[in-house]
Length: 293
Image (cartoon, rainbow, N blue to C red):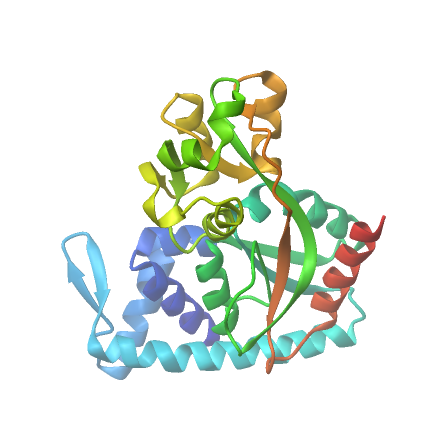
């Protein structure tokens, strides 16, 4: 059994798809299939059920998955320690962030960081706030960045940046459109439960006397872009990050309500008990320096 076989098995198990795993690992599908077949043949056990074109973990595969994650996690820790000895001349930084952050705020930060440390490889994953927290807790990422506080005692969290939510719709707002009563009766386009945008919006609405649990939700959508597009199509109003709606406001395809919400804080997340590499320290320091300017 090799580390490469373990990495391939883990990637296939998490995606339950050979082709997607091959794409993620930047190898051929035949190489992925051969690695899985070699593991199964060597240990005389089936790791996956082949169901039509799909694959599903067997009981043995599920048990093996837990052990494979532990082994690869320890390998990553060992590699990080060795990378630290090279003084940031090489290494890998695994970051996971919620959608608004990953799509709008983080790319220029990572681009500037890579210019300063050109030999650091950066891997970015995207999920909603709950998924980001789970990723960091499982050791799949070194650093998480989310759009609100996470209630998880295993994770350390600290303010890292901020933005602001804006209420938008396809036509200009009138004063009477922005009363708590009018907002309570309006049609809303919402992000899914578990997203930082959704939880922050709910909190902001409560502060102005609107009950989010009883809003008329015309649509619940899984991304900021789909929400913005639905609002531009006239399906209702929404609360989105200023980063998401700025181009549409400038172009006049959306209008902002004269309602002011307080700043929304972005939080960094890391596992309290896992090794904190110099690469992670370097990125968090770099972000702090940019925020202070």
